[in-house]
Figure 1 (spheres, one colour):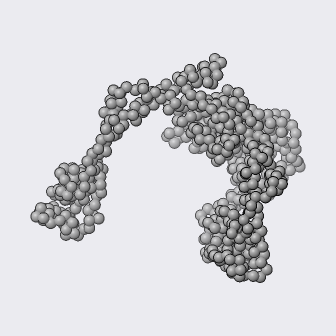
Figure 2: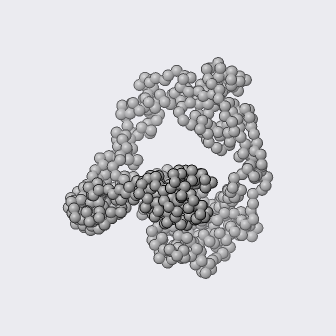
Figure 3: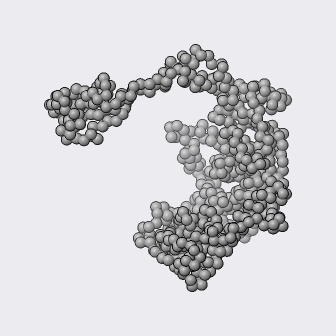
Length: 630
């Protein structure tokens, strides 16, 4: 997780080999060190370069948004800390600051024309015509809470850093020998023989005495800790919540039905076959033979075609591509009738219809309730914002959530207790409203009794909420979780004994016994896998098992856990194959990815070196103040 954060956080920083250039130009400046202290209101200072609290907060917000989208739920401040987002953002700020300070010492700049061009080239700011739009520019920046001046300054800083990198990064390439080694390493395949050691190989594990269970519980007490629970009241305002079916008259429903009768109609369809001729004389002769009693199928054969050639399919009249054929096919009275010769788009045609499905119209009684609901929803959408404003006015006037809801004929609902994952104290998973994940995430970011702005509900609605109680996280007693502790102990002990048994058998394998001899003595069945490839996955071995298979020489032996269940595999490598084709076996873009990885490593080294050149100060108090405004 932290690796992905580090990669994403430096995607805006240019990559390249700068160390040798900076040394040779003599622009290192004086030696420095990372300090932790105060530098005014700046979060980070590097030499004369400062990073403001606003810049830190915006970067922090962006990382929070990225992680929330990846996880499908809004993460809390505590979760962000556990993921290391604060430290990753700080590393991003420090890296940018030392690069900016080096740019300052090198007197690098950017013309106004070039800066304007860079802003105009950003696809996020293009309008419907594909060109830069001032309105889109303002709207996008407003949506992320960034001022125009801040964006332009940030864009200028990134472009100046890029100048340093581009001076030396162009032309860097991956050595041929490295590509060859990579191809050989990644393309190697292995064959293994193995057997599975499962629960049948050990004695059944039963529950131990209470003393053992309590000792296990004490050692794993955090795993049984009760999470924080919160009670939530909420009021949904959606078209569905305020729809009034009785407000729509029967006359309005029938008028809508008649105005949109096509919506409830299924057109007539016919299964159509056509026989196309090259000239009118051949078509007329064939038609005469059909009238005299020849089967249509025989006429198709006489024309040198097959019935597959003749099939057009089952279609509505409007779906037939040739209007002349459509008209003729739908003029035939019965299934089995054959038309006369038609002047079709591709020549003379004879048409046969083999099946007719009449037009159907859903009766009014069948669809009237659906129509009534649709019309009522239109009215509900029209009045929704008025109800929203009236509810907000009531709350502003001192009404409670329940009172404001009752005045607008809305229903206040209650979640008695839920943790941040939507589970009740009994372990059940809530499933109450479509916006549940957003509601719970917002409630766990709120305070008990606080009045909160609504979150979005459905496509055009709102959902107001309040936290009614907070039950802090606490340690559960052994008696509360005895059943769960017993189950966990049995499962863990079963896994331990299976692993112990498998490792003992693997030791025998290393001691000189063959896998077949061990399998026969222990009652296992030997199985085989061929062509396992490094870095791939496998249904039996899984990714971690594959890694273990390749973690040794050509006669590697060992045991690995099954990716499913609690079995383990005892294995021996029986064959190693090298790829044929060398570099050509590498997939598209691999060389570019290796080059990018080398550049990333060089960038890390360069930034680390700059941090020893410039005195870098981190103001933890400024960071705390920046985050406290979230």
